[in-house]
Image 1 (tube, helix red, strand yellow):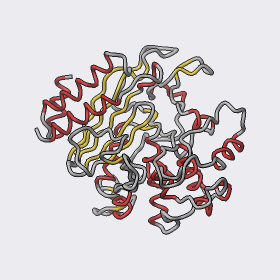
Image 2 (cartoon, rainbow, N blue to C red):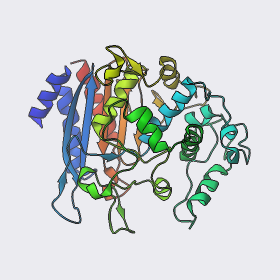
Image 3 (cartoon, rainbow, N blue to C red):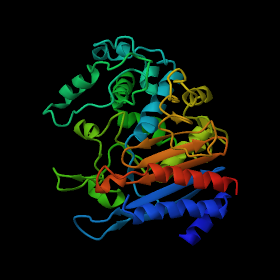
Image 4 (spheres, one colour):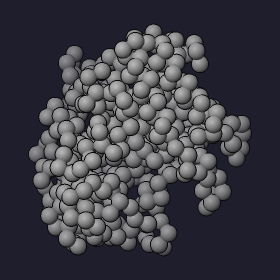
Amino acid sequence: MASSAEAGAEQLGLGIKGVKAACSAIEREIAAGTTPGAVLGVMHEGKQWFYSAGYANPRPKQGQPVSVSKDTLYDCASLTKVVVTLPLILQLIDEGVLTLSTKVSNILPPFGTAGKEELTVGQLLAHTSGLQADMNLHSQGWDREQMWDAVLSAPLVTKPDTEVIYSDLGYLALGCMIEKVLGMSLEQAVKERVLDPLGMRHATLTPAPEQAGCYAATEYEDTIQDHLCGIVHDEKARALGGVCGHAGLFATAGDLLQYARMWLALGAIPATVDPKAGGGESHILSRAAAVTATRTHTGHIHGSNRGLGWVLKGDKMDASGDWMGPGCYGHTGFTGTSMWIDPELDLAVVLLTNRVYGGRSSSVAQLRVQVHNALTGAVAG
């Protein structure tokens, strides 16, 4: 670990003490059994560094334990919301097809029931719609059409714009909207419009389970009598075929740092990623869209500070730690993943774990804060 941390500190231009502390925190949690393995990806002032430890799959059904590498693909869980659904919706706003005030029912008529007729795209993005957080789709015996009917007809549980309810259902509906507007699958849309342009070459919504050695295993699943590996962990996404707006993305730490780079550049793609830019810049998002998404949209709701999709500094779900700046933003995923971006420090931190491998009770919440604190301290030397 020491030599790797020293190399990372030198490569990133960060203080060695902080980088070592981040690596040590990860190793402690692996030793404690919180997660079998982890990958840390850090980008500072455009320079990237990766640290990996532990196992992607400690006990595969066949063969030897699979060690983690920087190229291990992780089930990103709810990072899907901000890496897949958010940029596609923002692009449609940039193109004048949608606005934040567009009524969802104008695009998806079945959504316009049970008091949801006036709900907007912006409310779904910011989780202020009043929709319930979750829904059991996988054990009802429903076919795919019945599942979508249940999602789109779900009633409100609170008045819109009065509280934040972190809702998978809202992002399921947004994913459905994207497919309806673009006339293509969410998988095709994000590949053509986000993943390929950004050079996120491993990221996918349709993993190949036969290549199990490439993936970090998650929870044990009775139906297959094995740990899920290259199969989405989220039950709703799995029941709906894996391609959804709220969960289902698999990616490496490098893929996610490429995505973070675009946000640090306020929507721009560096010419090194897009040679067609002709020495200049092309854009995934407009500067205005990137700025709008990362400013607060829930300032009127006590205890909440959310952008469009993103968790902002001071929100009850903020995992940035003590020393990231007031303009930082990020998101977490249930499987043990996270991405945090601090424009002021020109810093992005991706931490990927498979903390659900041994069950859902393990938590990496404290680890995230420890890693973020160590690395932000390292920026100062």
